[in-house]
Length: 302
Image 1 (cartoon, rainbow, N blue to C red):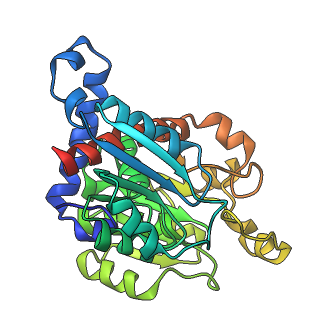
Image 2: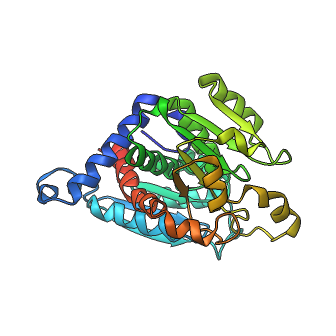
Image 3: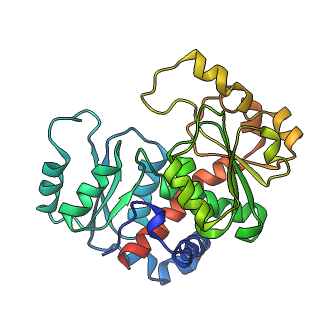
């Protein structure tokens, strides 16, 4: 049985297949060929639990649409208001008794996903955890392929700001595909050391730098919020990260043509309103979440 908890568990060939299939699904869905192919029936008769501990716009709606587009029945459960009522193991053992066929889980802790995988015996998809955001990273790379047309090893991607679950998954993708990848962040904010070293063993072109000039002439710059859901605003953190804001002057100085952001964003904080308005590829990325999630479901269930 297959799961998607982290892309580190996937081979380069499988990751490439997921992106190729996402492109095929996107193209087919927009033609009359969709009704004649196998995609609309992959999840026929299957009930997929959407288990969410955190609020969501893109992940919730795209996964619900993805399941429906493939013929399945999405069952959304918002556990954000009941956190702490019972342990993950009891939740998993209950879920296991109800005949569900798969779980898409957006959770605070990676260990919750591991518990679900252990006790439910159905495919589990990580729709975000504290450590990884694999479906987001797949959509990121699909979008970069559409934008640049470059081979993975010719692509140069910079993540700017505080390292987090998104940059972890981008780094894993870079390790698997051979992409040049730099995390540009303040010296006081560094990525997970063990994961960094693991990825650098696979791809020496993965680097960390606090110097913005080190990402000059890259193809894509990628930003994320400085304050994740539930984080308390601290002026000191914002002050430290101000030099890493994605703005027009920065893009001009670095000669970077494309901007991506996983959203939601705080306009004029980590990225300026002007940049968002001038870079529609940010919303192209949001769309591609749907297609890559359908590709993942196809891979796990077909």
